Image (cartoon, rainbow, N blue to C red; front, side, top):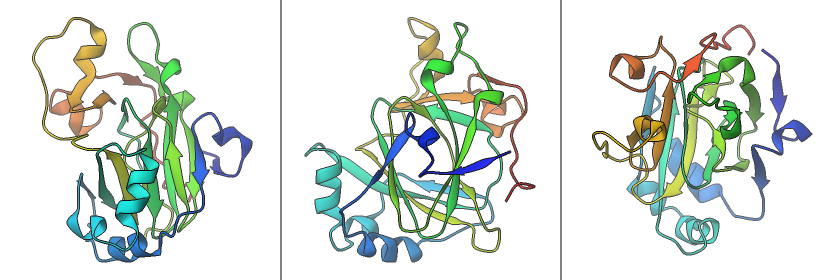
Length: 211
């Protein structure tokens, strides 16, 4: 799979590079967080919120709305799922990492998406990006298996926390997997085995041979 830099014009429909903020304190806090052999996600992390400039940056990114700064850390090379929120997500890594992403308007009328539409973008260490609300994404992939990834996840407060109502008025409701988290799972994923909506078809992309 071709992995493009986020400076490539092809990234523009999915997000943007965020400039101007002093992110050194957040990066230092991220480096203290564990990096497991698999993938770990924590929605809100006290040491990141306590980092120098973190609260001011969060307030600016979300325009004064309540927000949470957490992490997604570990080692990964597979797609497995795609999710979206009703708001942008902000990412910042201590090392280079790779995002596998698609667009919400590529979901078909049956609520499914062909993984052939997924693109891969490499995000450099220390560069913050905004993934727009219409960008489908999931766990990052590492660019270096020796380092893994430590990635800031900035979202509106309580996103990705426990919330899974029964039923629903339409097909979109069937994909609501957590608070402010609509999820499309690949049939090979553990999320699908746990009952998530199987909304991805085609190859479960693995970029291990491309990094």
